[in-house]
Length: 88
Image (cartoon, rainbow, N blue to C red; front, side, top):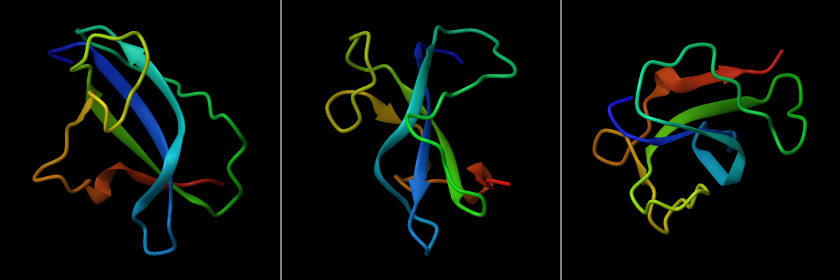
């Protein structure tokens, strides 16, 4: 990452659009990161589609605040389909 930020997991609607509040998040300082783990707040079900997103820490607070300061890193506000995966 070129900035401090967050890796965030989301549930999705049947159409595949991320929805609701985050399933979990973890913060990362600027730098190279590998094998990042996001602990979910509750267990996803087998077959459920989840999304992983990157957010820039724009407000400098120690917690992830979507829509209140931390900014998603999506092209034109749309999340890339390449960040989705199915729980097995």
